[in-house]
Length: 242
Image (cartoon, rainbow, N blue to C red; front, top):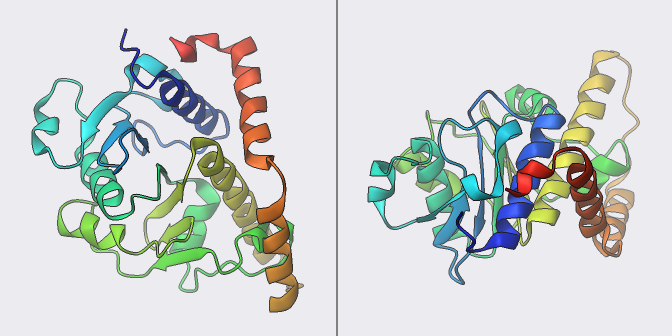
């Protein structure tokens, strides 16, 4: 068993298991990573072909963003995973954890001509002015496309990838998963509200900014959320730590 970076391994394995539990996985597609070197160029990522619901801490592999021979190893990551996360970790070293999903409601939002998330409730206000929108989809995330996407975050935690899905970037696994969870919840509420066909109650920019600041100042929220998730897994699926 590989014991290097064990805390990051167990935390990321927890994130994978909970993404599956919450229906934010897609077959054996999608990928999560966390940097393990100071410059971000070495990072843990899931190997190709493993379902999120079965991933264990020891399954995760350390790869180098500058080493294309990574794709020759028997436990190599998906080719788009390596290209996209390598480019992101090279160009966004502050983004220690990167979660990419095709979660249902965020992907629906990414399919709309106007992919902005209006401030209609507290969860959506959390992300007010904190979402970058990619409107230049140009195929699978390989080569030039991965490089292009990696430059779009602009220090924001959310990249809504038009015609594609969602990418979350954060300084920790706990923060990244908390953002993933609440952004998907906000998208679910918005898409559901749109389905009524009735006018939306949209908050003012002033109120939305105030609420976003209150979210950012909320003490230890992401860490407590993630600790609670790990506690549930420790009782119900302790094998994720293996």
